[in-house]
Amino acid sequence: MKRLKTFLVTSFLLICATSFSIAETKQTEEKDLYEYNNLVLSLSKPGKPIITDKYIIFTAESGPRFVGISFDFENYSTIHSFEIRKTRDVENNVTSSILFYLLERPRNLTEVSYRLIIDGLWTSDPLNPEKQYDYKTGITLSKIYLQNTIPEVTGYQEESVVKFIYKGEPGQNVRLGGNFTNWDSWIYTLEETKPGFYELSIPLPTGIYYYNYYLGMNSFVDKTNPNRAYTPEGRTASVIKVN
Image (cartoon, rainbow, N blue to C red; front, side, top):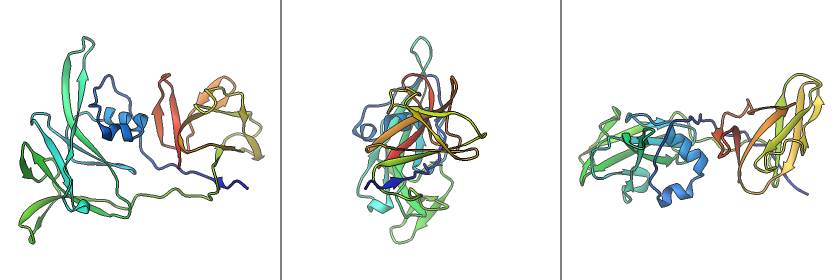
């Protein structure tokens, strides 16, 4: 008996930009490239940390030769290197650059303390106004306060079957297409289980999936799922992750 999974995907908005350059590091290879790259594309200038449901994004000016970051929940034992994002014009000339580090939000934490190391010198984050003096060590730490812990996947879960739900006008012919169908929207049609409420459950193995709903020849994202990305084909799609 297969168990059923309903995924309510955690929220963040993925924004497109003109051009970018990302250092090819082990860290980026381990992350989903669509999600990671689109978050990096949304960075326009250095500023205080940005908190999403899944990530904390740290930025720094691009002048120093090296910027690293160290966290309290790791006992400051590891220094994570910032990466660089470069924006180029149509002639491939660099017009601006920014240093950044994306931290996957630790679960069950409501605050994070950290320090930066800039060209060999330990310091608090000059772009983060939230600071706290640690009397035990005699140093000033930068702080981030998380209003809630990172949400878990919710819904009733059983094996590798994903349930898609669409709410609209009654009597429609709502189809589903995605990278799991090679974007063929004529394979799956949602069933109208009650007026204006459409459902479809299909088995999917572990992975990242991009999909859209279809009415006639028109495609559109899942409005109940704010997790979106740009596919290599240039379309905007909704995203789910099957664990």
